[in-house]
Length: 261
Image (cartoon, rainbow, N blue to C red):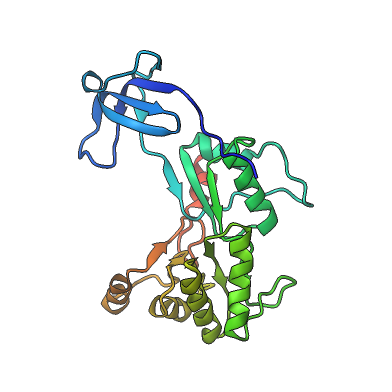
């Protein structure tokens, strides 16, 4: 066991335009006060008292926004079990303002090792959460076989022990297997983020069976009142993603067209 990395001292970011989660308009000439690892005050510079020992950083002309939480972020990982001291995808996410990432498909051992290294301050990156390896129902070397409720419990307990609070149910072809995963997750207080693999009817059973949310776009060009109403009343989450559009326009091609990637 090691301690989580918690910085000491105070920092005041002074003079920026600040976009908050509560104010309808940006705050002009504002101060953000950080003490230890907590933001303790945000407001117009004249209203925020800065402790005498705090480091002041002039950020006039800059805009500060809350950290971005990416709930579907495949951040990559090391190969052959070798964990690098630095990861360019993690650093790039942090540089673009992502302060928390949730990876719904990654290698269990690698991703939770990286998450612990980040938490301990030994690796730079956003706070990292993950499902670990997906609970895949198709024929692969890592297929998650779920014939009974005990099977589902065993898979979720295994991932929870590694550090997961979510699991990804992916291409489990039998609906009762998917339902057993949901039931086991409720027992263990975990969340289930499934993927329909471009099958709308499977997505609809995800919604009606009580999954936490649906990953990637629903794979039809038009949604009508029946599906929209069902989705809304279920209170299930939805992560459409700009890359995997399942037959629709993908956001990826924009960058090939407009930039030298």
